[in-house]
Image (tube, rainbow, N blue to C red):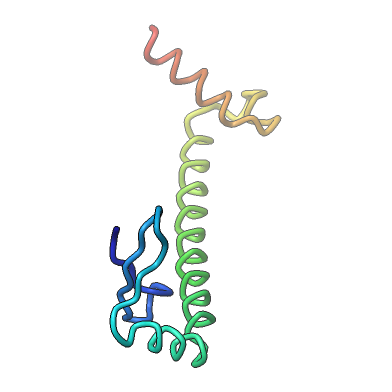
Length: 100
């Protein structure tokens, strides 16, 4: 059994057991229902979406940075780069560097 913040932001810590379900202490069920009625699940979903959107932006920026660095590793005449297969070009370059 582990304790979990219902809806991630409710502040209501409930006990959860995979085998036996969810357990509520005194007044926790009432507090969960009030959280839901007040739009808490929607706020929780919005917060989760915002966090995921921010993470996607960070990852997209990292990919952009790596891609631009990867293009700098190869001459502009490399046909793999021109055909858009940057991963194959990078893998070939790494093999050549480390196997020579």
